[in-house]
Image (cartoon, rainbow, N blue to C red):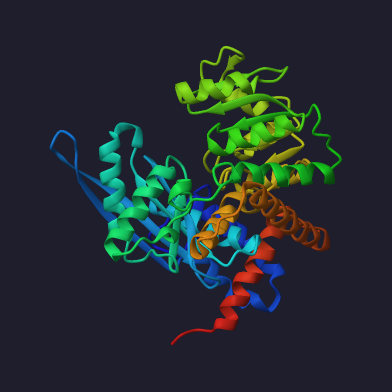
Length: 423
C-alpha cells in the first residue's frame, strides 16, 4: 500500500509497479537498505496550469507536470510527453525510472520527467507553440542546465525542444542551449540523438542475443509502437539480418511472416501516421499481436502493455523493452518462469539519455563530435553497463531487471549517504 495520499494503490498503476521493483531490490542493498525509503518518494513535484489563447480567440486550460524524483547524483534529466492520459502519478513513475536508468549507465544525473495532459493532434502548430512556451515559463522556476534538463518523449520532438530552449533563454536573458536536449542540430543538438534510443535497444538486444545463443540472422521480431524508438530499432535489426514480422501502433496491427518490407513501410508510416493500412502485410486483431510467432518482442509504446495474461501467451525468447514500464510485475514473474529473457527498460532504452548526456556535454564546451564518435561512445557505454548488470544478475541469481535496480540503487543511495542530510 502506498504511503503517499495522492497516488493510486492499484497494483497495475505505474507508480505501484515502480514501488514493487524497488521492494524486490532491497535485499541486495546491504547497509544501504536503510536509505531505501528515499527511492519511494519524489524530491519535488510541480503541477502547473497552462492557459493559452486558441486560434479562434477562446482560452483553453491544460494541466502540466514536472517531477524531480531524485537528484543525489546530479541535475534532473528526463523527457516531456504530450498525451491525453498523462497524470501526476504516471510522471512520478517515469521520473523514478529515469533515476534508475541514469544511474544504471552511470550518467551524472538524477531522474526527472514532465508532461502535459493534451492530445497534440487536436492543436494547430501555433497553439502547440503557445502551449509549449507557456508550460516552459511555468516550470522555469525548477529547470536549468545545472538543475533539470528536459528532452523529447511521447509526442514531443526537436521543434518543441527548440521552443522550450528559446523560451527559457528569453526568460534568463541569455542563450542557454544546455537547458534541453534533443534539439535541432543547428541549435546545439547532437548528431545521432534521433535514433539513439532505438540504437540502444539494438545494442543491448544484440548483446543479449549472443548470451543466449540466438542468431539474429533470420530471427523473427515483433515491434509494438512504430514511432522513433520502434522504427529505429527495427531498421537496425533488419540491417543485422533479422525479419520484422509484425508491428503494432495506435493505427492497427500488421503481420507478414516473410518479413515486412521496411523500405516501403517507413514511408507509409511517415505519410499516414502509422502502420495501419500498409498494403505489404495482413491486418490482424490488436490482441492477436501478442500471439505472433517470433524470437524477439520489442514493446516500444506505452507502459503496462505486457500483462500476466499476455505474458503467458508470448512466444518470444527475448523481450527488449523499448518503452518505459511496459511489463507489469506479475508478468515479469511469469516470463522468468517461462525462461523468456527480459532486457529491462532501465538499461534497454537508455541509449536516448546517454546521447542526451553527450549533447549536454557538447553544449557546455561548444565542441561537437561526429556521428561515428557518438555511436562508438554510445556502444561502449551500453555494452559496459549491460556487462556489469549481467555479472550482478549471475552473482545473485536474479533477473536482469532486479540486477539493474541493484546496480542503480546502490549508486543512488551511496550518493545519498555520502552527501548526508541537510540541514
